[in-house]
Image 1: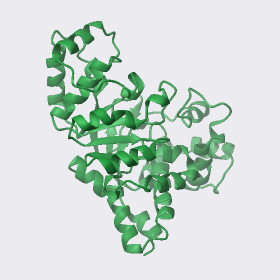
Image 2 (image 1 turned 30 degrees about the vertical axis):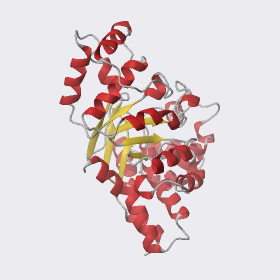
Image 3 (image 1 turned 45 degrees about the vertical axis):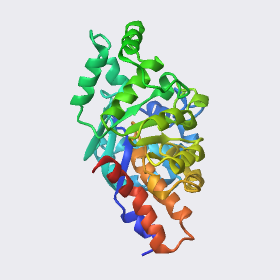
Length: 342
């Protein structure tokens, strides 16, 4: 069996993903969802690398030729019952287990199954800001959470270049009193992360690209060095592009650091082959994970998996087949199962 054939049979663990929209939406909302960095595409979402990938790889699943026109794709999509559309793309993804961040617009999306859940630390903190004892209430909230990991979106709230030392309860209480309803204070952010580490929970960290609420300059995972040195639970660097080489260094240098290049695999489209190859330049294979970070459009749950398999096959094409298959299996599912206890 060739590596390409082997990869098509591998059942992935998607270690960071969101749900798909509960309603199919109109064409404008569909095209907007193809653009990660803006509230709307400059022209058409189909003119982005991701839009081209949708027309190339998703079109055949709707009975169209590869590279169908944008109009033909939308017409076929709109004519397909939404439940059938979702099932088509999720089945084609070949994912055995989804590890879901349920904190992003939970009222607008439906979560995949079978799944495990990730707790957003900033959201959990916001839910206890009105309590008399915020540190104690947050610890209770964390202890009661039925999750396999936690996640910080510090990159969006205050940037990663902050004081990552563990704050005392008095400082946390003072920061909570001074906060509005949204957690943006680095003291609160650092408190949440350290409490998660205290409970032994893996910590996912958004790094690299995101929407325009984020300052990409402060999303470099190298800013996390003080935190990485201070805790010993798994630190899982999400997305990472364009800092994926920095993430690869951190994964090599620190035993408890792993990373993925999810999100960018979709948004780079055909160029994701180069991205996956660059992610494999330095980092140990046992520190790399698969994720799609798909949100909203079921096409993205499929595309993330398809483009990753395609990129892995290209990146490992010159390797001995046994070695290539072993590394692909390790990244596809083995590493995530080990880290998350699946």
